[in-house]
Image (cartoon, rainbow, N blue to C red; front, side, top):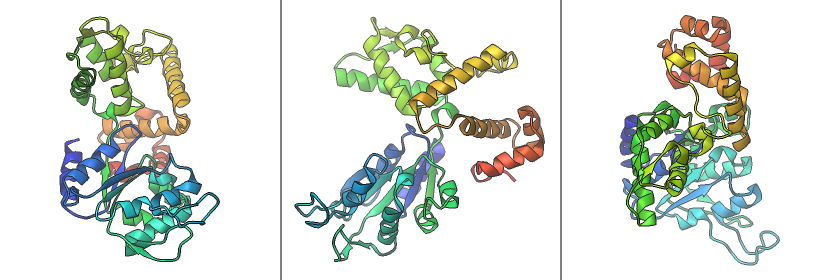
Length: 333
């Protein structure tokens, strides 16, 4: 995260386009807002658009506006986000879900600073800084012809990758304290304390929903706690392991060394619980990729040892590295 903060500082003082990557819930919009607040455009508008949340037939109108009569129901002229944001910064979240037609218009704005409203033919000039974000591997989308290669390179001037919460468990206590204080302010109450066993449980949990899931868990615990201290029983059951959920993943070396069929079954059940909550999650590719990354990290990028740890041949490991684009992420040779 210190590297993320350095990148925010470096890119904020420039006018460069930035691409923020990371899983859902890691805080991509917070990074975009930090860049904006520390930039020379901080006195100008900032607008965030979730490209995945707006139907594709409406997204182009939302971004660029439309003329009266452009389509059924367009009874008035509409000014789009880019015009509203002139001289400011626009944050395009989940840009990987944008349609090819809209991608073309975004590319034109980046290249020439102009666009037309839907149903119009008059070029409109704007001075807008674009910050984009995605939880998808855009390189794979480019290879599959689902995302324009020229747009990708225009957006990928400065990339800011945000690590998932499971890769930075030391941040969990800091975030817990922050959310406790935030909830206390909102509820106008004194902040609650947290039992040590709760912190240990939170540090071991895999956090498929990342920081957003942690915030929701602390909010729930704050409401459920019957005393001034939050206990394990106040956490959601899938995190505490005290309900029908499968609880935390066994992450310590001692636990991993004694992994049984029952443990593996429990892990599988938890994976499918996450898959139920996130319809986009494809369990096997997601787990395969994380296993390969972790094996390489554990062996300091020694592919022979990593393959042995995974129980596969080195040739198979190389195929997985290429398949998931891990070379670029870990700088593997």
